[in-house]
Image (cartoon, rainbow, N blue to C red):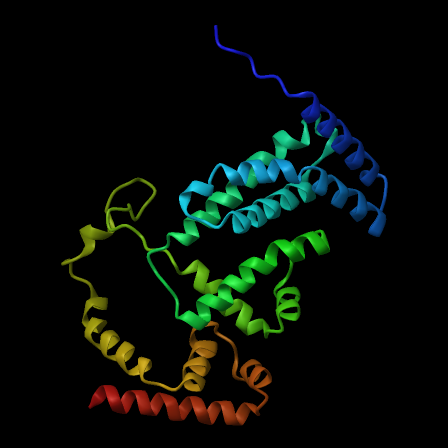
Length: 258
């Protein structure tokens, strides 16, 4: 006969104290409410640490995993409803595991950003849990920028670098019905294929541009900011931005045509 799992006395006491803190928090507002939620989070940090320790053998620094697990704990605390009758530990565990697994997945990404951008991305990732705990909510781009001494554009670029770290399998289906993989399209008649050589040439030219020109093109064509918005970020006039973009585009056309 298999053994039936029963929570330890310590687990039961922790669940009872946590439930009491959340019940009190539900009747409070502002700083007092946040203080009770923070106390519940701190009370359950051993749970986050225990979950993080299960994945330590996968090659990630234990301190980093503990911090990521704590972020999952805070996220769970912001969504927990004590009236559901579910112990907070049981509610929080899936969220904590999800954060840890997502972090481990990012570490094994097949695509790497440039070293400065990767360092900035890691700073943004590390700041997330700390700010979430301090603010009691998910930090905004502005919160992260102010905390790290970066511009909002820098934070957005760092986040985008993380989102673009993954590739799609050629065997993945293109439609929900499971038919037509990406591999099935190669060799098929496609008007876009005529632009492949041009795209490769353009990529080579872009690599040779100076950092300021690269950033200007990124803001305009990747972030899709208007010339006025770019001017505000760079501290120049909209007319200057227009002239710079026109000169860059003419330069790119001339090089590719040659």
